[in-house]
Length: 77
Image 1 (tube, rainbow, N blue to C red):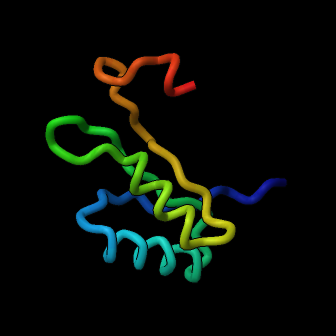
Image 2: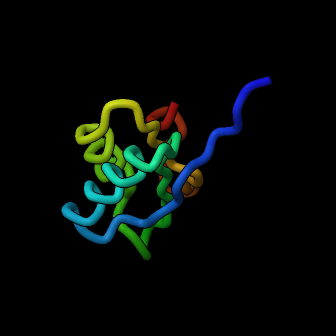
């Protein structure tokens, strides 16, 4: 039986706190760090997710919501 994936869902506020969260999540044994894509209310999550990946070794990153009305589908695939 495969173990469940345990993730942290958060919204980036600034680079320092976001990368610190990524490091803490990885050190705490979490499998992934996820951020939502809410244009107009928050910055695009994709740069923040790349920053989280850059400061961790095994932590998965992803967007748990992508706003299809704003993001061109062929660029997200």
